Image (cartoon, rainbow, N blue to C red):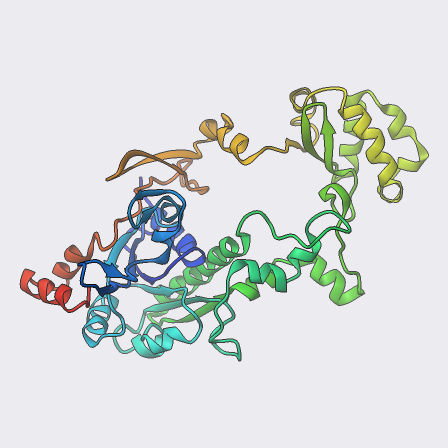
Amino acid sequence: MHLPLKGFRVISAEQYGAGPYGTMFLAQMGAEVIKIEPPGKAEPDGKRRGAGDTARAVGPHFLREGESTYFQSFNLNKRSLTLDLNSDEGQAILHKLVATSHVVANNMRGDLPARLGLDYAALEAVNPAIVCAHLSAYGRDNARTKWPGYDYLMQAEAGYCQVTGEPGGEPQRMGLSMVDFITGTIFCIGLLGALVDAQRSGKGRDVDTDLLSAALHQTSYPALWYMNHGDETQRTPRSAHPTATPSQMFRASDGWMFVMCQLPKFWDILTTRMGREDLKDDPRFADNAGRLAYREELTRLLDEEFSKAPMAHWQELLAGHVPVAPVYTLADALDNPWLDEIGMRDEVAHPDNSQLKVLASPLKFDGQRPPNRAAPLLGADSEALLEELGYDSGDIARLRAGGVV
């Protein structure tokens, strides 16, 4: 399979979720993504403390000690190099890598890239075309530069928690770390844009994004409604759309389903296929404004109708005609046979599990999803990369003994 980023080398000083999630897309698109991970400090028992991406230690499920299943979620197709960027020899190795690379990425706290020599000012002399991509919590150029930050904090400060949940209930975060994931995606959009320009101009640059900026940007049209009209979007019952209705969850006889009549035609199709033209003819529900004004009564009437049959009946009746979906548990969602039909389930060979189940890339190239490899063991590629840079076995042994790699 011809992958679009084959031949590009990305060095990434990354850990945990947002940055690794983004660079995994690059690796799946064929880029050689080299994770730089701290070698840790040697202890009397021979083990190294603080070694590797912290995600390797995130439980509760492990393939072996220090190698979590969680880590596999964000690091497929990558290589791993342990390297102490605080040491002079570590910086020398970094510069040798940068000379043959196209991108240096990181998702460190905002003050650390400059301190560790990962920005364009530090690397321009080594490789003028290098793109230095930065993902931090709050940015590198403001009073919060040194602040640590995580997804849940951004959901809180960007207003997500106050608009999520049932009216009158406690603030709720989303069930997944969506700020991490969207920021990692935006990170790669900026990185790829800068890379395209560097390939044309021969001149690299810094490109930045941060969790809070990305979270705020995702407030999208409610943000513009508020900033321009003072209209603050509130929570709605049943996770309903704030303006279109019926567009919310309803009760089938065996559980919940989501029905979305975003367009007037879908309301007409829904009532016709349900055999409830009386609802379509009811003057209260003649247009979206009326349905919105009488949403509580409309919900009651539709619940009565939907509760007469299981979700499978309504899916068969409405799917392809009206936007509809079952409200699945996570287990149901991942056991859905549709995942196999569209190729979203994959298996990779890991040293501790020859059939490790992973999700396939959501991207397709020429109709095919790109292939996956298991995430690397800590430092799995250190020796090969150092040899490529001209270090012999004696040099590598010395670097290991000194805690540089």
